[in-house]
Length: 438
Image (cartoon, rainbow, N blue to C red):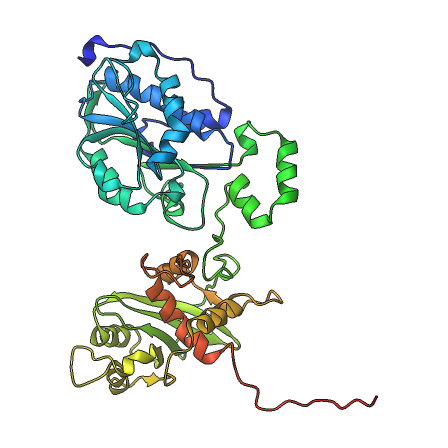
């Protein structure tokens, strides 16, 4: 049916920064676009222009009606509230095959193509159709699994012909304001020069959007703390408020240190079958530097083998999870700690693990104390997983460190040496109290 439908171009009025994002649409080197922008930049208005264009191109390029056009938000309620009314304004009645479906929030075009508003909270229910074009709003708040398990595969099957050339794969624009160093940061970095060849990313402040006067920005500066203002209005990636290791800063805690020939290695280790983790430190005076890591090894024997292979000539001290004294690894007659000692490593462990709160406080105190002194540094090139975990582990709804997102194992490993060598609750053996006369 699409060959009989050629909707007229609609007038699109965009600010210069919005237009820059728009003009990169449907370029081969920008199949995956990420726009990280401050509040009130005009992301929703940009989305209207993008959806209008997708409707026109689907008809022009004879895209299969099985490949739909979607606007997605973190929840269906949010998607409907923010965009459903705007979508009906963007798609004129002359383009539609009938009335919009108010229950499903969908519009069927005369070409047979379907434009839909969806929420990603119940993303398993979205499986089925293919996707020609997708906008994801408030990307930082969406579930990564929705993209990885459902949306990305749905984009892969779309085929169409442009100027006689066969193209495969739908396009996506992910828009929103950052929220810490989560998946939004990862996909933004994919689009930076020298990274992924089919990704393009943009970052603009609220003021650059052209919708907020500078006087309003000044008012916001007076009322907001610096970190929140930078995140919300300047689209800056900041440590999220709920992050456990809030003192970590990948720039201020950056290290270029590496393992040297005569270094003694201080290795923190967390025991988890198939997910054993370790962080390798070297000590430089009173400062500690994370200089290497081991990620997702199978068990303790595998970890021992990996350490010996990588550092055959170094003295090694292991700072493990105290539960390893009771936990048996592959050999049922030997504990994990016994295996480490048998391998020739020095094992430094207390009779029981320090309180989780104490480990966290020790770590944050080394990362940055109240005098703005930093004594713990991380080589992010050598320790990319540890760096990511420091930036992303948050507290759960019960006020405990979240263990569902997979960022806990590396952080547990990294805190054991710090809590042992620099305990937050070190006991004072004696104190001199001066006497005063009154």
